[in-house]
Image 1 (tube, rainbow, N blue to C red):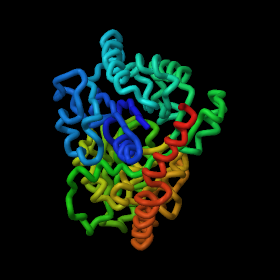
Image 2 (image 1 turned 135 degrees about the vertical axis):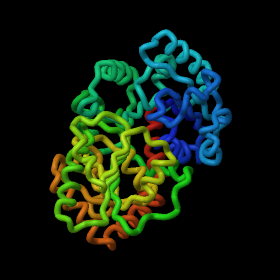
Image 3 (image 1 turned 60 degrees about the vertical axis):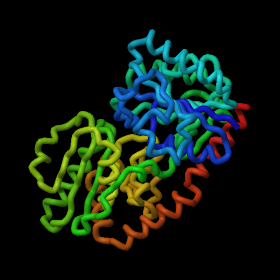
Image 4 (image 1 turned 90 degrees about the vertical axis):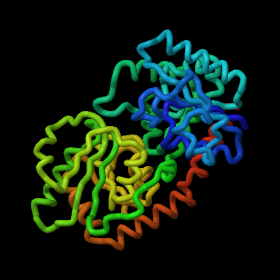
Length: 380
């Protein structure tokens, strides 16, 4: 089968999914270099509107993972520049017409691929990362473009099962048109060098990702300060790494030497190092769909403490690959951290469970890709 994947995200899940799909299919990958925070590609280094993957230095390390001759990087522009955006969309469409794919996966509602969406909508499977927009991120333009794409593309794929029924009910969709798969480990991170030594003297807690109100970071900080206040744990540290604006005052937390706040975009090399040197990753989210953070942590077999929201309980198997707690609860975060701190055997067992389940088991990328192939049967 000939598959085209139209994306605005270059790395993370896409590369792994494409790697799995191309074992039995011919896969063409289009991605947009626009916001480096989304896809780690610097559009300033692109010399053409559409570059082949072999011409993009930042992708060359992946030449054995995906087919760079069938990868295309678009030098993007913002949606507000409608005329230029639509002209680029027309140029992309000329490539797609020549490829003439059997099916198309599209993972966004941007204008980047709008011409192709109009022409090829009956061949498309819309990959919906966020069935419902996050708290604090329900912007008019997002709602408007989502509404258009949702109406044009009938077949849709969610990446968690928990929200499927609510999604169908809310939008009044035919259940036969809504499919589910899942994220597996973000193994692209293994292509970036990491430190080969973990500071075994410390128990390192890590939060990473975009800073946003729905992430619940304040509850994590409150929990950690409570742990420090006991003065019983001198070998425990917390790192919060990511770009974005905090919705609360973080100055009081900066006085603690055990807390490191890195409020900037984290390049893949540093991200890999942070995860590799962590003991546990915490996702204290107030709401969520699925989480690339969890899958990034699992790439290095790190257990995750996550809240019981959205699709997180599907990704973090309670007591097996991490701990599920209630949201907006600093005490629950504190107790979960200390449970793993005080039980190194449980921490190691969780790491082994991650390897069994996600690297070769029922939650591997091969299993995820099979769900997409099953959904394609509704398109052909």
